[in-house]
Image (cartoon, rainbow, N blue to C red; front, top):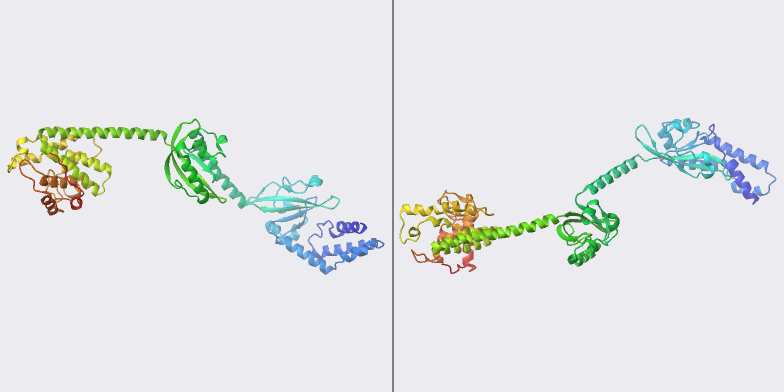
Length: 518
């Protein structure tokens, strides 16, 4: 016990003597002071037998002490953060090389000065570092940030060095340049604030789920759309609360796949889904869902747009369009029946042309909407003949030039009859152009090539085939073979070659035949 007490006394009074501004930092001065103090101590306590053992344990020669000191100073100077040590009067007693570089001053020139006169230059001690006033409680303090004139920002931490009796020895302060981190943090905060603003003011719901289907993020638009405040919904299973009952099992199946792979039937797509609000009412929404991996777990981020009103409007519009289409179809049929009462042969001709035209349109890949319009246009393509005298229209034998010119007016008259009818297809142009020809030899305008709409080109081919292959009051049927031979002959000159080819394919593969009309 006596040896332990003597050793502590040695450390406190000799090994770690308080440095002074006069000789601090001087290697030879510190070594000399240490050695002299050691010898003086043992001379005063030579009668203590326990010191013999202590002397053997601590008998370092000057070379060993010098080596240890140099090693300590090398470590001190290797630290790239500026470090300084000051006494109770804030005068520098130790500084490392990094601090000297920041101060732009040699180490020896800085020692003995108050640190705020050297670096960083201030009017007094760093705020928050007043730890000398309360040494017993002081273990370390985070000082206020120091902002230099050039914009650099330093964070300082101060530590009190005390002896074994708790008495103040010195203060160590470590400066760290946090400029880059502060800028990154400021940019991050700015980015977070922008995202918060976007999220808060977005008109679409923004929802994030974890791989268990639990809601992790819920913006104000989601509150408005679904009726759940964030406090009631976060951490809850979205599918159990919001998904339509009929689709719930599908969502559960998809969630299992998503948890393992981040993939699913609606991931990366925009889909329309039915759901339910807090009050139980139905909502139809458009979902755009993406997958993101966060810390090894898949999360789904969805942008949800309430399209309930638009969906209901689309249903109403579809019903209205269906009613309108039916009304238009009925109107066309009424025109056909009107013509049939006067001239059953012409009416039957139109219906057969409509059948073949629709078949050719399907063969050429036209859409259902186009085929529907094509069928209606073909049904009344000769409606203008209602103004042609019956005796001229069905007279056997050759017509005079005046009579033929009168018959040729039927396409213009038919166009005029329905020109003001608002069809969703170019019906009027089909009627007007069905006698135009690719080489410009047709009538009434002598149009060429693609100036003739496709539907009129199709009706033109079907018209020729039907007219030649079916019986007429003024002549017997010429047969389908002669009709196909004729359209083949005029392919590329008078008739559209693509339309002719589609027509020939239908007959050669026996995929079309005229019904027994008229």
